[in-house]
Amino acid sequence: MKLSMHAMSVDVFTQTLGNLSGILEKAAATAAQRKFDAAVLLGARLAPDMLPLTRQVQIAGDIAKNSVARLARQEPPRFEDNETTIEQLRARIARTIDFLNSVPANALEGSETRDIKVPIGERTLEFKGLEFLRRWAIPNVFFHVTTAYDILRHNGVELGKRDFLNNGRDW
Amino acid sequence: MKLSMHAMSVDVFTQTLGNLSGILEKAAATAAQRKFDAAVLLGARLAPDMLPLTRQVQIAGDIAKNSVARLARQEPPRFEDNETTIEQLRARIARTIDFLNSVPANALEGSETRDIKVPIGERTLEFKGLEFLRRWAIPNVFFHVTTAYDILRHNGVELGKRDFLNNGRDW
Image: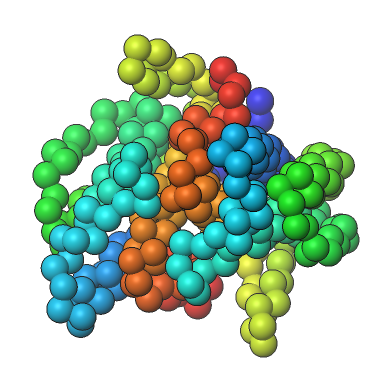
């Protein structure tokens, strides 16, 4: 087990996105059990000017995918933002994890010193790879995964920290 | 700029805790401006069985502090959980950051393969240092910092992703 840019990006992101998929599965089960339309959850927000659950899930995966692609100097697959069901969102997460797992560890070797540019509106943020990973990619991915979790907890879906951390694995 | 256990723990945690402190400062300013008691925010939760803001802040810092101490084989400082104001919470964060910055990088060298034990109730989780960092410490710290942010956004404090990510720095 070695510390590497791959270990701190691909492995971190596939783990938390897998947990997110499990969390969404529980949300779907809750909707079925309580007989409400799961789409209500997909549109739920914590504040009127925060993004709803669907966007939180899409963005979490996109930042993981696009960040690893940038570090590896690859072109990431682009997904349309057209999911309308939890099942579709989970399929998108699965495709994202497939892409992440397709990036070979050696494509990320030396990426800590690569120049990374992130266009944000009219600005372009510039980082070295290590700063990009730890100040942008990792915080951003966890922000959106946690906010998805928080939206669901706020709406009464029974989840615990364990669902967020380890997807039922026994470490 | 080198990838290391120190770079992926101390630097990541001091960064996000510094941002959390800035977020709390904005919350205090909002309370003053709108003339409500900031203590209302400290007790706010996203669900009846989720922890309130004060605990989210305390736990975010404690997991950062205790995780780095475990990796470095040091005894972390213990803080009483007695904060009742935003100012006190920010002082606690400052003490936590001071401790994190006091851990020398060489104390974390080789920590990726160290055996780490985390007592959780009656169980003890066992990890190698790298797994502990990326599957426990990092997700956990970001979980609590994000949830603190989400609680404040849900309560109308004007914050943006920028406050979460970079504390006003221009990268």
